[in-house]
Length: 152
Image (cartoon, rainbow, N blue to C red; front, side, top):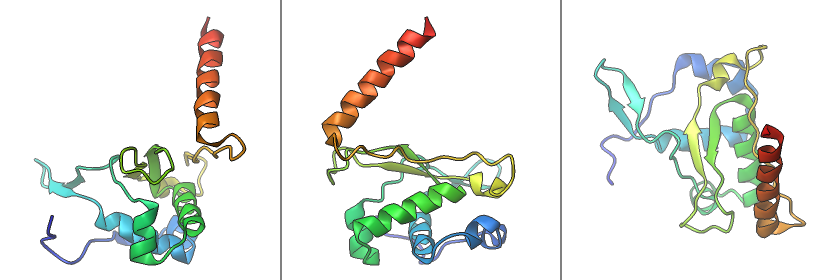
């Protein structure tokens, strides 16, 4: 899809926020790239809305090709953006780089409450490297069994 313009809008309040000030420099690049991935459409009240929020795909391969980031840098940037409330992970992909199950992200407004007692902290689940991907599936399945048992 060809872009109709070659720019995007950043809210002044976002730019001056404590959350933005606490971003690491690489995280700023990644956040700006996330902004380019938004699909915006005016709603009935004339306000712009992100119609693909929660379904934004930003693969590691793309971070490497567009921004020159290796996987550890991109992971730290994603974690930093989640930590201060700019993005949320809505679906954790399989981690193999497969296009069949990519991670999905949402642009978040949590940053507005960053540094206050009302801030909702979100973190990505840390992958258990010893067990690998299959181990995480087993771990998740076991946690579901425990959750179901505790509901009784």
